[in-house]
Image 1 (spheres, rainbow, N blue to C red):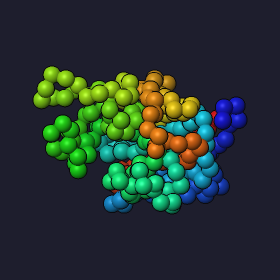
Image 2: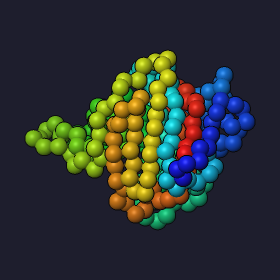
Image 3: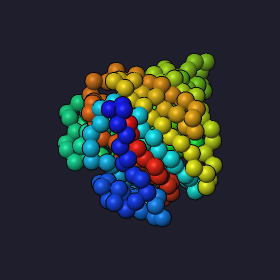
Image 4: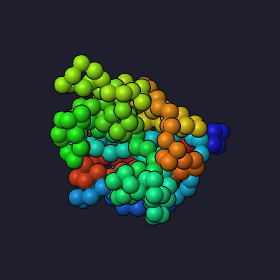
Length: 222
């Protein structure tokens, strides 16, 4: 879509009201997550092909700020394709049809999963950290051996998130190539080779994680 800029959320109630889904509140010109005990999805009801997304986020708590930006996902109200439905993530909030740019400096592990025999999945893995494409292998060390996980995305940690400080998030999707920047520092590059995920065009959305508060503003694409 390069060349034309579209404001998805400009701090006005009018732009906020265009979004669909649940888990977000409009507070003082900001989009603030207010999820209960379930994952929620808040998304803009327009499909985009190639784009560069810009947003600003602010966390409130160093230990509780899990969120994410979803890109290239299908209509969350439509049934998943048979190929995706069998992957065990049928809740639309997980958006297995697209990809999530993770926001979580704690890189909290998924308590339902293991990591090469370690259960639950440990905290601190690169593939679960701010600026990574969530759960895409990022060369994490396999601690009980001498090797590393495969490196499907090339990830480097970005600047730390600081409570109360606004930070830039930029996501570029061009064809099958994904790139992410946090505060101007590139954190990951990834090429999608999964024919069932990340199909173009797709939707853009924000995750509201249970009992984790994160604010967003100045969301646009070009």
